[in-house]
Image (cartoon, rainbow, N blue to C red):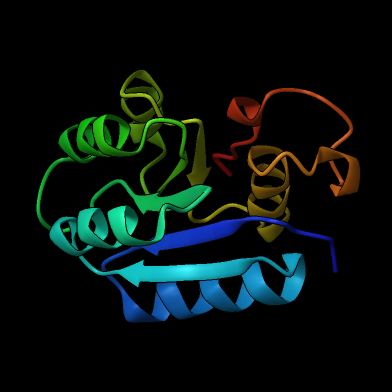
Length: 141
């Protein structure tokens, strides 16, 4: 397990995906999961309440297009890092253009999520990453 000093907010339509993400983030990284949201309205409210360091945001989150959700998050939270999750690799360009700090292909290897979270949280010294931008960590297998 890695040393993690960040709060992560999970936003995904699926309770099963949120459970898997929570388990992975807590057990593999030792991070605090500050909250969860199943739609954009809940995400915005929870994000304002807990002020997370990192948000794992499903691009297809119920309640609005990813671009609009990203705009609202950036406007309300400023420096919070956002990693977009999607099962559609073709969404990567739009997500990064909208201001995502990273893109995570849901069908990619778990190590991808681990590397990105370590980098976004400023824990690169403890991460398996040697160098490079988090934007580069995406897989389209």
